[in-house]
Amino acid sequence: MTLVANTRKTAVRIASVATAVFDMHFPFGIRMNKDTHVFDASFFENERGEKRCFMAALPIETAEEIAAEGVKTAGSIHRIDRIETAEHLAFRKFCSEYETALIFLPQDDGLRVLHIDDNLPVAAHCISNSPVRRTEEFLLFYNAIENKPKIVLVENEKDLAWVREILPEFPILHINILE
Image 1 (cartoon, rainbow, N blue to C red):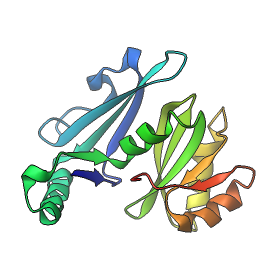
Image 2: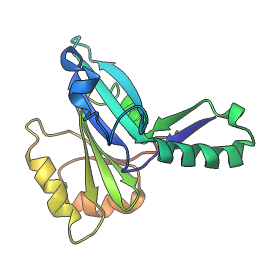
Image 3: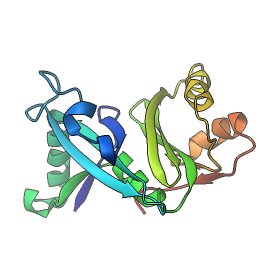
Image 4: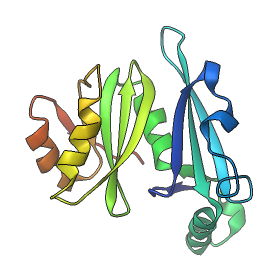
């Protein structure tokens, strides 16, 4: 059994493999270290041989809470293979499939927006899900993107309407990262 952490508490960093030295991309120190967080990395490579590293840091307390819930479901800690982050799952599933894309994942009281470009992870941003603020927050991120994505993937069907309003020119697909 694999448990999936889908929380804004996950700190994420993306770096080219040439510069993917963990202590350069995570603010290690008193607040984030091997005693406070569980670290994981995934490596991606596109057809041109470019490589990128996606790193996630999940607070230990959050990992323990997820594991405790998993034990309730699985009946035993021995049935749990690993804890995975939603960001890792989404990037692994969609980087090879889409050259450029935005992925909207609901997280806690907001949304995580993942950006794929050239079949590689580029960014992971959090925005609120407040109808008053989310469009403005998203557009700050979106307007900074040079190579605009060709497709938008939305995990929560409720997000289809407002995303379609602000990005009417893009095909928008409903997806399930757990399938």
